[in-house]
Length: 238
Length: 205
Image (tube, rainbow over the protein chains, first blue to last red):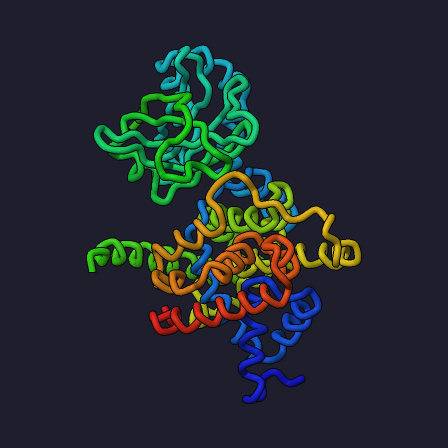
């Protein structure tokens, strides 16, 4: 069957459409994928349909994968661990640091932040810290970030958990106006929430961050739908 | 044309993101690990969400994402910016990886599932927006505004379920409680309508 022949164009188009949508039977899928490797007409029919179809995926709410995914990828490919996260993870994992944090006042945090700041003379991280606590003043999460980066690192303190089939979502609360969603906080003791823009830009006019309980993919409405369980002031060390 | 300003903004940021991703892919093709890490940070939340939707299992979606990124590392050099947007290329890698997995499983279970009314039917996940909601949301933001509206409810639902949850023709038929032939023709008609409409709306973007 030569799918590239002009009289087969229509059939090829239909097969390519169903391949891109994903409804083709397994045998047809395998067959087409194999043919596409050597036949440019077939390959371009597939990529045309993939382009048409991919726009449908644009509005799926993004979900930050757990950090282990990246670690596994690095391991499988034998890459050198990404320098920045490794250094930061070491800092975040240090027991003494977190023990101090959970009991320390903000001043304590600033001192530690400054110590860390001196220890890394090459890349000067200008850190930003948000201690997110609940109504009972108990600390649930601590968010840290380095100026210029496009993510916030969140450390769970104690046993803060959103509950079964729920997720924590992080919000920026501007001085005036509606909360801005920053992203779903993946499960884990130290995780990252990726930002669309650098931290300083994202949080430039944001005095407070808050965490609400949402469905797993995050709030479906773009506004907090569950209870706001933690909040805290954005402290800039620069 | 009240939505013009909004559309303009969306296009600009999409354009910037595309340029950035394309530049990263070019560097990854030269084995730049830093670029690979950056690409992961930028694209993984979207790609992970796509994978979760299709395979409907967090751990499995993680595996699909890992395998996809291993493949992206090895094949970044085959990305052709003239042919597709980087996010389309990346999304296709993840979708195809997930769909291959689902279809492989389908072969394994085929004899059990055919002609069996008691077979456990596919259940839609109860959380989050439904496939049809997502389709309409996509339609809202894209050139396919109006195109989705052209679809009758049968084809619309079939396409949404197939796209967002990776259902095969057979699974669609059992889920929608319609004969296989009907479902196949819904998908075919729906795709043909989308194609005409998208291409007319300047789908070459």
